[in-house]
Length: 260
Ligand code: NAD
Image 1 (cartoon, rainbow, N blue to C red):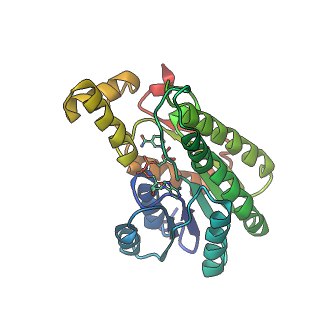
Image 2: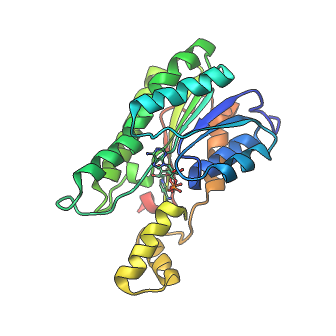
C-alpha cells in the first residue's frame, strides 16, 4: 500500500474546523485524499493545514442541524469534484445536564447534529457510492455509543443511535464495495472536552490540572487522552484495502473505558 493510497479520492469530514474532525481530515489528506471541510468558526487555519499537505481543499459552512443545508453541502462537493468517496460523520456537540433540567432545544440540537445529520449525509452520498461500487462511511460515535454516563442523556441517546445507524448502513451495503463503521473515542482533549474540564475545575474549586486528572481517573483506566492523530490513523485504516470487509463495527479507542 503506497503512502498516498487515497490519491484521486475525495473525503467530506463534517465538523472539521477543529478537534477530532480536523485531525482525521489531516490524516486522510496525508494519505492523498482531497478534503471537503465543514464546521463553525474560522476555517482559515484548517484550509491552510490541508492545502499544505499538497491536496485540494474546499469549505462549506452548512449547519448540520438543517437538512436543506446538508443537501447543499453534499451537492456542492459532488458538483465540485464529481464524487464523494469517503464520508466522515464527525460534527457533534455536548450538553451536560440532568434529564429534568435538560433544555428542550439543547436536546433537539444534540440529536440533530450528533445523529440525524449522519442519516442525511449517508442517504445523500450512498447513490454515488453505489454507482462506483466503492465508498467508506466512518461515523465518529463515542464510548458513549456503547455505555452511558449520568447527565448526558441526549449525547448518549444520539451516540447509541449512531452506532445503530452504522450497523444498518453496513447491512444495507454488505454486498458492495461500500463499508460503514463507527469509531468510539474515550476522552480526547479538544474544545468540547476542555469545556467540561473547565466546568469541573470551577464547580469543585480545583486547578485545571487537578480537574483534568480527576476527569480521566473517573472513566479512563489508561489515564491518557486519545489523540486526534490516533483516531485519524484508525480512519485511514478503515479506508484502506485491509478494511474491505470490516463492516458495522463500533471500534472503541478509549484507554480501557468500556472494558470495565
Ligand atoms: P470540537 O468542538 O473540537 O469540534 C466539533 C466540530 O463540529 C467543530 O468543527 C464545530 O464547528 C462543528 N460543529 C458543531 N456544531 C455544528 C453544526 N451545527 N454544524 C456544523 N458543524 C458543527 O469537538 P470534538 O471533541 O473534536 O468532537 C468531534 C466529534 O467527536 C463529536 O461528534 C464528538 O461527539 C466526538 N467525540 C469527542 C470526544 C472527546 O473526548 N472530545 C469523545 C468521543 C467522541
